[in-house]
Amino acid sequence: MKTVYVTGGAGYVGAVLIPKLLDKGYKVRVLDLFLFGHDVLPENPNLECIQGDMRDQDLLRQTIPGSDAVIHLACISNDPSFELNPELSKSINYDAFEPLVRISKESGVQRFIYASTSSVYGVSDAPDVTEDHPLVPLTDYNKYKGMCEPILFQYQSPDFTTVIIRPATVCGYSPRQRLDLTVNILTNLAVNNRKITIFGGSQKRPNIHVDDIAELYVDLLERPKEQIAGKTFNAAYENHTVSELGEMVRAVVSGEMPELGPIEVDTSPSNDLRSYHVSSAKIRRELGWAPKRTVEDAIRDLCAAFKAGKLPNSLTDTSYINVKTVQAAGLS
Image (cartoon, rainbow, N blue to C red):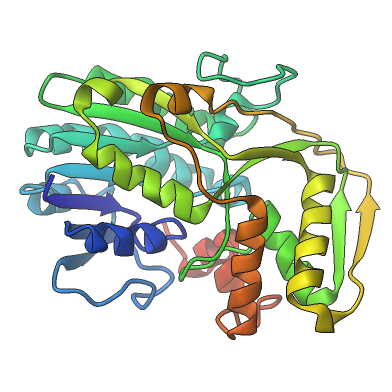
C-alpha cells in the first residue's frame, strides 16, 4: 500500500487521519468539497488535494487510478444535517456509494475501508451490541449508512479486500473541529458557559477518541487481508451514560482550567432516550486492536485547544456545526 485515496479527508476525522498517513510515508489523495477550508490539512509534497464532489463519476475515474487503497469517510454526517435536505443526503451517502466502490475496483484499488457508524443499531436493550445484532436504524442517516454495507461486500474478491468499521461517537480535538458531538458539546459548554445542560441522562452512548479511530484506519491498511476481508468491526472505547459523560467533563475541565471556578451541571427531561451499549470484543479478539485513549483524554485535548486559542468563537461560529455549514454551502 503506497497511495491512499481518502474521500472526505478534510473532515473532522480526516484532518486527524491525513497527517498520520503522511507520517507513515504514504502518498495521499484527498477528495473533498472543502466546505471547511483547505487549511485543516498540512502542506506536504505527498498530499494531493482534489476539490470535488464524490457523486462526479468522471472525476472518480480520473483521480482514483494509481491508488492502492480507498478510505471512505465522506458523507453528510449526523441526523440534523440529513434531515435538512434528505434527497441531497441520500444522493451522497447512498446513491454515490456503489459507483465509488465499482470504480475503485475497476481502477485497481486493492483495499476499501468503509467508515459506517455504530448508530446503525438504533436503540437496543442488549447488554452488549455485537456486530451480529440486527440493524434497526431510527433515522434515514443511519438507514443509508447501513444499506451501503452489503453493497460493499458484493464486491469483495481475492484482489479487492473490503472491510467495514462501525465507529462509536467520535470525540476530541481536530484541526477541523466539530462541536456538535456529545462530549465535544458538553466540553464547549463547560469551558464557555461554566454550565453543562444534560438532556435525559440515563441514555448510554459509546465513544471513541478521534486519534484512536484515525489510527485504526491506518492499521487496517497494513493488516494481512485474511484478517479483515469481508468483515465488520465495531470500534468503541467506553460506553457511558450521558450523565456520566457530563460528570467527566465537569471534573476534567475543573482540573484543567480551575480559573473557571465551579461548573454547574443541570439536568432536563428529554424525549430522545436512544441508548445502546456497543461491544468491541470482536476487534480486540481478532485483530488485537484496542483504543489507547479515554474520554477524559479527549476532554483534556479540547481544554488544551481552548487554552491555546485554537477554537475561537466556539459558541457562535457555525463552522463547528455540520448542519449549519451544509446549510450555508447551499449544496444541491
